[in-house]
View 1 (cartoon, rainbow, N blue to C red):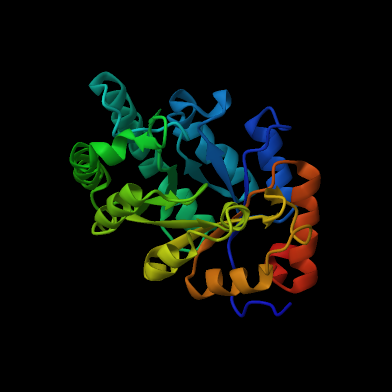
View 2 (cartoon, rainbow, N blue to C red):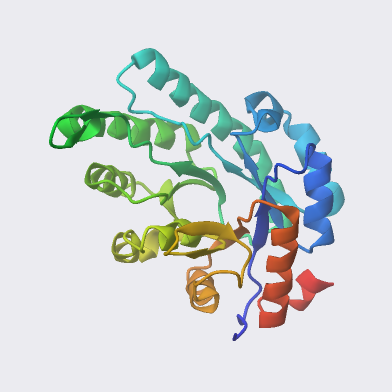
Length: 288
């Protein structure tokens, strides 16, 4: 595996084995990683915690690491129930406000050319099962769906302003056609970009790759883990699956993208870091 010419930024996800922020920070520091992606699906990292920015700045500063954010996977700004969609919009607004205060930490210990990212999933919405097919409600009511995302784009432009923050849309189990239209509309704004989760991509036979490569100029964030197609698996330690990791990392390097080593256990994360060291993808600074 050929190494990258410049130092890449590698981070770790929030791990379920670690019950405290300090546990995650200590692991991140011990492995020589640059950042932690705080996951808002965890009870420990809800808004009330993210808004304790003085605590986060102090904790990260002591170990010279920074934080990115993974928005709640249930986030659904297009929900037909306005009470629900408004709650998710308010969640994003407050998260952005907290993230603004974390940008200096990101700039101090990260790559100054990379924005602080808020990673998000597209919510497929519900479907109705008919005798001969399934009907996606967002596909049926596409105009209503798209208007919700137009409003989301406008709100995020207002909330982010000139802060160096981007919301990055991640692939999961295959983008629906209506989601592709919504993402392309979001990408009209400089406040949005793309995440390529290479493990998710592999497990669904790389069906999202053409769409991602059509917008490779907006690709700034990677979730790196190994995976396989048959049987479909992801979140494997690097080297335990079928993905050409070197090829994906070369692309990440050419995009100056930040990479989260998104395994789900400490052991798999440790193995993945060792894999990167052997391949020359960790710089001397990271290995020191």
